[in-house]
Length: 104
Image (cartoon, rainbow, N blue to C red; front, side, top):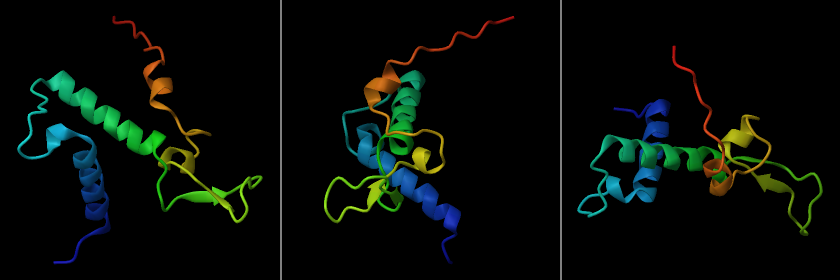
């Protein structure tokens, strides 16, 4: 059976999460036993994958090359989709204020 393109993206995401989260590997003591800690760990890993880490296949031409022979900047998926103009350090994400939603 041929692999569908959507399956490839899902498996790539799963592999990246397994590499970055010890709670998803087999035979480990790093367990996320509670739903809030599981949600926080997976959410942070997915955020970092899309907003912090540049993807090897995504690039854009350098505005002003600073090194000889360098013609492209590596970009994150969020930068490629024009959702942001820079790579986010985790400290920037973790220091954002949480918006308060009024209940009513």
